[in-house]
Amino acid sequence: MEPKVYTVSEIQELLGIGRSAAYEYIKKVEKENKPFRVIKIGNSYRIPKESFDKWLEQ
Image (cartoon, rainbow, N blue to C red; front, top):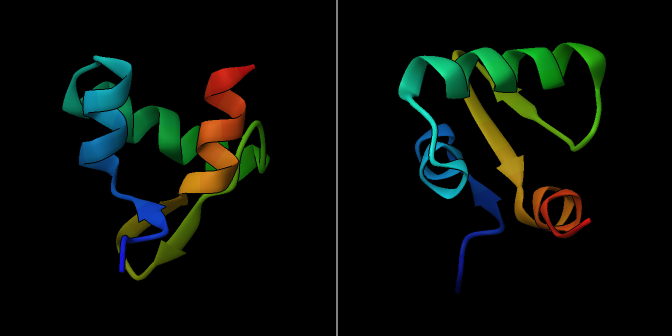
């Protein structure tokens, strides 16, 4: 079964940005709750693939 979420490292790679920039952006998205969903579990972030892919393809 394929995972239904991305990690911040995967988002970093998909967007071609650095680690710090990726975490900074994910924290901003989580706080504003847009343009895609971010789930925070403890100190970890997970990004639902469906939500992120939909945003990326726009």
